[in-house]
Length: 416
Ligand code: HEM
Image 1: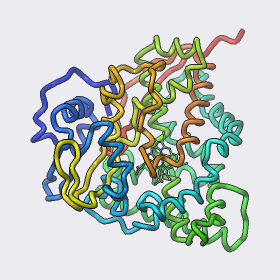
Image 2: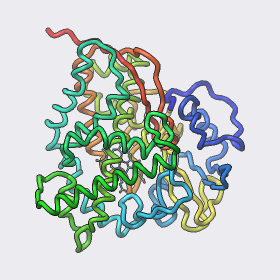
Image 3: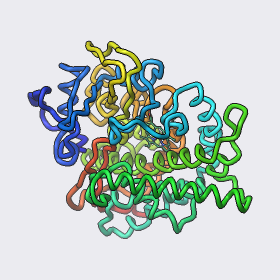
Image 4: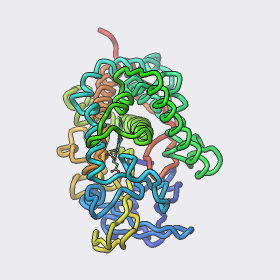
């Protein structure tokens, strides 16, 4: 998705198609969302097959939809690629479960992912990132978007307890689940790609759980933690463990790489911001927040209205699907002055909602923030400049805002 929008233009919101994949591959969704926030903060679209959904684009409406489970339930599915198909994992998968069960399971899983818990992984993560940046040092063209897909596996793989030989396949499968229409990841139709990848991933985690149970091995990894965690007063079922393991794998694999690529691209386009970050490394944590806001890698999440609900100057009928456009909320001019300016010193960048809002706020946020901070610390320390070395290609997805190609070359810092 194009992250720096082109000039403002008049858009007919009655004919705009938010599910048109070309809009995200070669179009300019930010100019559409700008008009939606201004003129139709509650927007309704009917797809040619009869499925329909409502959209909210303003910051406060996005927070309300994501954050209020009494009005907007997660239990019928939260991912737009499944619009209109009730989630079979409702009440069993963390992301598709409302409180109070959600609170119990989340507490059980979350203890190993708090900021405090992940801090102990800092050295391991730094070593993985230093290794990742190594090929850039030889001055050759490096396709950051392509390579970054492997970054979470390098960083999170060992923490999850996943053997190195399985990484490449899991990266491919998680990309298929989230971008089933992208030619890089598609296997047959979109529906077939989704079905195959979903099945393979669940089977992978289920087999992993079965093997662990049989051998009794436990190396303290995140997945091992799920085997012993208790939610309420009972252990998680094997089905819950498999589904939540799947969800953690997905969450980890499909978002951080695009945040890395999108933020690096923003710095390439604005060498003065790159120089500023390099001159003052204390700005890196704010650069990370601005990068999260700017890229909004999880571009939206979905909920279903429980009852007829007034929002954004209109009404969503009971059982209606509503898409909360996070990418738009993060460019809401009432929250972020000059929202289409990328500013690593922006005041209030931390109000970004790239990790969502409320009970389902990203459980991996501390790990993602730590990974991104280390990535930019190491990048800025090693290179004096980064340039684009070819065509950028955007991911063909209306769910994940990302890139498939970002060829770059970097100039190594001279050692004293
Ligand atoms: C830049 C990186 C990331 C972004 C932008 C991101 C974004 C999000 C968003 C927007 C949600 C909210 C979903 C909702 O409201 O329905 C979420 C939830 C979640 N994320 Fe992330 N995520 C990132 C990294 C990670 C990582 C590293 C992990 C795993 C270690 C992870 C695992 C999850 C899980 C399991 C949930 C579900 C939480 C729940 O339902 O309570 N994410 N993420």
